[in-house]
Length: 224
Image (cartoon, rainbow, N blue to C red):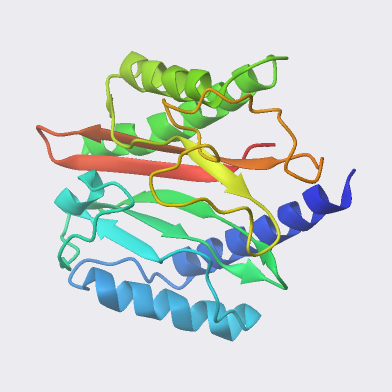
């Protein structure tokens, strides 16, 4: 297996361990603000791995804030009883980027639990479909993700369905240029190498929402 892929897998495993420790320490509880939980996770990541650097803003969103796509900065909310929330963190481990997103439900609301479970199943369904393709544009993968969301009864909530990842900092473009994103206007092949001829590596990220119920779910990890 190529070195870059191994490094990215290793970084993701550490990020996954961070998320498991968040659950083990029962940090996700009602009555706490999103900002407080965000700061607690930052401190925990420093404690466990010495992580102080993230390649994108750290996201904790609950309740109606789960409708907001990445670029928005909604007001800080207090996590409620019977709530839904998601985490999106991009820690850097020894110059290698991870990007992990997970949805959590506090309480027993069946619709929220369905959303949490559906988005996990859908992610793996899309991943399996991707690896059956020999030619595929980023736009086609985005459109397929939107169709899968609809199949499960949800609206797709984001203008992207993923992005490149690599050694920090990975390839960057000017704002508004989506040629390195899984975006409906990016018709480049998912399999196109980078400017140096190296294989690109992708994060597949999904954001499913129900605007009427004001809930959203999020799931992302390496597309491997």
